[in-house]
Image (cartoon, rainbow, N blue to C red; front, side, top):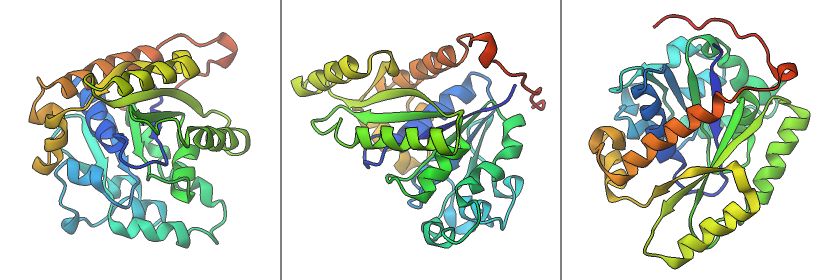
Length: 272
């Protein structure tokens, strides 16, 4: 089976993108999948969230996209069995400028991740909160895009621009790119506005919205400071349980049969 490469994208910060990358990947690995997470955000929060020390890295997503290291050299193991990470450092922020004069600069990450398609079942790319060259690279490299959307007043603001960017990438750079779904995050059931946001998003986007909603949860927020995914820090917390349900829903969405004319043979994945 060829890996599903999923970009997590939203140009707004603080929407639960990194939390989703960490915990959804962990939940899928717990189901026996081989999972790779690519931290493609110069802030490196996903790297910190897995407890990886940035000071001791010999390679990273920066060296990977710049061609100074290959995928194997850039990948580190994590405390989660079956889950690997391409970590990020602040050096990645320079890639936005350094890649500008490079030929086919939008394809650098796609080319670097080519070996991953047969090594893993799922690859998640945690892209930065912007619509710059790094995010374009993430979208070009991916088969699917997942959009975390916080249940707050300005939730829909900027979403139309993100959809336009995805459409442009699909039409001009990556015809295979599909919207996997919109994930509602940071839901507070005590807040009437949050429920109104949920209703509005579902009305506008219908079945593109995941059934699973991620609640605002203290234990999920605490987990990164302990260098562990929420599912390891407190698997019984409402937030962790929500990501377990999301993993099941995502696998179900991705195993829905496609039309015969859209189906393509997939190479067999390497054994664990």
